[in-house]
Amino acid sequence: INNSASANITSTATVLASGTYANTAQVTASGQTDPDSSPNNNNPAEDDQAMATPTPVAVADLRLTKTVNNSTPNVGSNVTFTVTVFNDGPSNATGVTVGDLLPSGYSYVSSTPSQGSYNSGTGAWTVGSINNSASANITITATVLASGMYANTAQVTASGQTDPDSSPNNNNPAEDDQAIGRAARRARAYARV
View 1: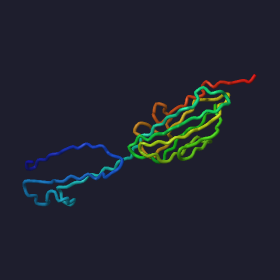
View 2 (view 1 turned 135 degrees about the vertical axis):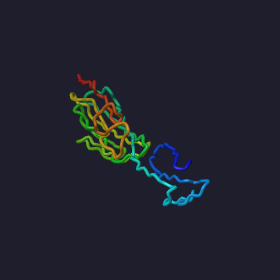
View 3 (view 1 turned 60 degrees about the vertical axis):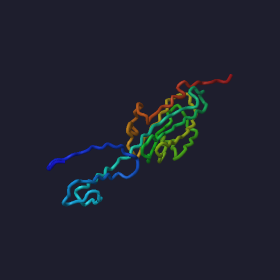
View 4 (view 1 turned 90 degrees about the horizontal axis):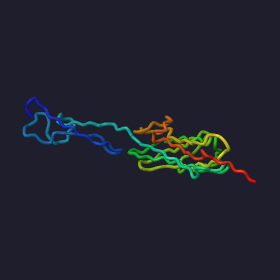
């Protein structure tokens, strides 16, 4: 490097979900004497060493699916919806809540969450934490009524981390954190004779 000149390098790296983020660079060798520093001595007080420490923002890509055990149930019969929320990472997710309030075409019977708790009055499933590459699910059983709305929507309503491709609680069916159970749209009445 000539007198009064400089050289630089650009390094690109993927930020991982955990680890050490302080990145240090230093001059490790020079053919000439440096009057105020010694190469490769790992002394942060010298001007031939510098450190950059980014502060990563946790990202948890949550997606949601919803299925039903019977897509054409009889009126008066029970159906079971299964909602599964996946964490595609790379960070662990905390503070996860899913909204799944049964529409007017159903009467709530029971629910079984794999974790957390479900409030049938508000439709809030308080999931809690989901580790990277893990999932949680809930089954909700309901009786099919003779009239009402049958399209049953569930969506992630809250998360403690940024989701790279969706926004919680924005009611956007194009996003992967929302799904509709299309069961019972053709509910059939039956009569005993």
